[in-house]
Image (cartoon, rainbow, N blue to C red; front, side, top):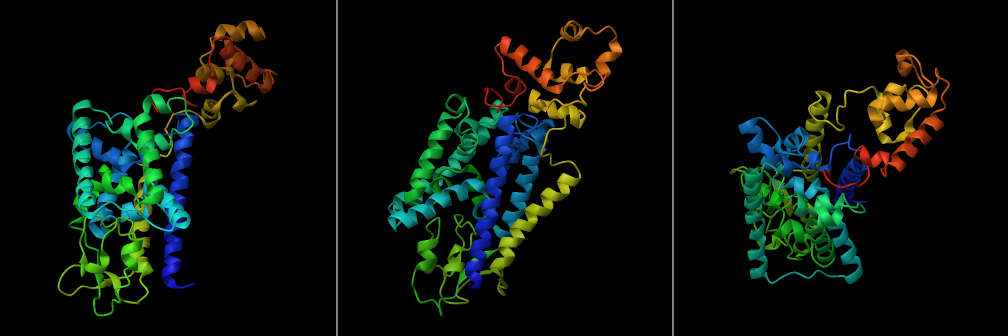
Length: 392
């Protein structure tokens, strides 16, 4: 296996791992709200909230500090490796890419818009960027959320998908269907984060150079480019559309014909491996440091003991080490019910564990479920899990 093929596989492994991780995080939030929504892991949420954070020292609704951390990490990456976030990190971009790979296998070709129309449509992402930043400014909320295909992806199968994210779902479906025939349509035409990074990347250090003296004009670089840049006609790729995905370099059949370089008169070559793993390292270091310093939170801090916090997953998590106070605190059951049910006479008994009171956890689970059923409720949904609508 040659080096280029190996680097392609590593890129896919990184992208697939991030897609799986973010999907798991999104599903955890759907199950129980002590886990943050996917908005907390989206750098565009940080961009929408940046002005509010600077002006009012508050974050927009649903935005966590982690999204702001990811925003500045993404900007830092763009200043070095341009739009490498889009090409090597973004899970929504990779999701479209997977459909594109399937399309290439099935229909053996790509269907691209006429160049003039394509060039005009690419500018759409910039008005979209301005529109949603302006709306966020006026509404103090994540205005893009109902239209966000990534949010819709994380609500697939939920009851509120069509009520809260119908537009986003339509955009998601169209992006994936069109992605089967043409590469990364949402990235090229509508993604506001892509538009923002396109602006930042204009001052980015890393660019692709083509050595015309060794180029055999096979145009394979043009065919594999996910954003349809005509690499074979450039001496230096400076387009804001370039995702720094390295597909053109890895696919070039002639060694040292396409490569990354630094700016200036004495341009130095940058290995593809340095761009790929450099991007990953910037994100890994940023997330690791902020996780250790407890700025990047993977789970909401409830302030509860672990034995109490686990009850938020549902009454099936009730164990013998839980007390009646734990049950009351989490499931909001009036203490008098337990007084009557278990013939309690002393207040201290509420602080004893179920084991100490000789109450089987399975019996307590049955009681909680029965009370909620009689009230027409489902305990896990009431506690924020499931798909009960509202603040997802």
